[in-house]
Amino acid sequence: MAVNTIPTVVDRMIDPNQWYDPAMLLVGNGALEWARWVTKWLYVNVPPTKCESEDWSKYGVITSFDRAISFVLPATPAAPELPIPVEGSLLVNNRNWVLLSRAALALDANGNSLPLSLFDVEMFVPPVSQLIETQPAANVFGSGEWPHVMYFPEEWSENVTRTFAVTNRSGVAATFYMSLKMLQVRQN
Amino acid sequence: MHKRTPALGVPNSPRRLWNPLYIDNHMLTVMVEAGLETKYNDFPQCDQWDVSLDFSLRPYETKTDSMKCKNGTWMQVERRASVTLIELVDPERSQVIQIQKQFTTPGLLTVSSFIVASDGTNEILTEETPLPLIFGTGEWQSSLAPDRWNSVDNRIWSVTNLSPFTVTVSLSFHLVRTAPLYID
Image (tube, rainbow over the protein chains, first blue to last red):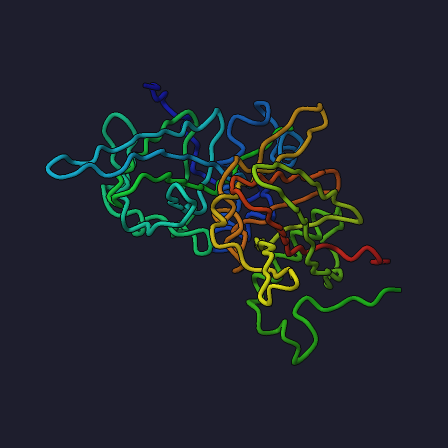
């Protein structure tokens, strides 16, 4: 199991003269303060030390990424056996991320879409923090057409592993896909 | 001189119904991305494009296609896809005709995208995922953050057909860009 390292502490004081990526005005509530903060959050560990904020963009570009996690789920066992959760994990790399939305899709063996309410999900950061309590996926994940948009973009610290567990209550073997839309600085 | 369009649109135009902050920030971003200075009180004219990549895929086939940004800075704001199936029918038992139908199991199509960086390495931007999670299925899926295709990116999309049918996939992108004919 991956061991979570202590994330870099990012100073939350914002210099009003700090450069911000203007595209970040379209994320969150459109406030300058937010755009400056999220720019600073995403560029942690990217530019060299003592680099002026105006030069940050020379070392990377804030880019949208679609992260994918899939779970192969056996058919629900007959009573009195209980279905067993299947786990999968996502490790944040050595840069900070921001989560914008999440969506899920469950398919049977023939590719037919299954209702998300038939699958329970749980998400936790080992060893203790449970960030999504076990509940139907429909309540916390949207579909491809209507993703679950985070109330405000969620900060994901570098080098932290999040573990997801999915329980199949549909009665048939299925594959469960998660799609997470993230922002991250791309350096190449 | 190319006439500039006010950022909020001409009076009584549909664009005036948009959230002014939203469209202003759109144009500010596109303008800054294009390297234009913000000293102008008027924003440059921006086009909105609908571009598409089309794939005809046999069963279990993978194809790639790319769209190279040109003529200024693009910003992708929305994306959607359609998947159709060519079905051969013979209603009169005398002539086989082709009809096109919406494919009912689009989850069997997977997509991924990457760009080739300046050092020659591939940077995966969309990990392989069922198509409906990235594009919806005919309905618009707004991008929540501008997916910027700057002037040097060559975005490559790959589509894999995991179904036993021959299908046609169309990926559509709604883009905002500075007009290439902008002349100061």
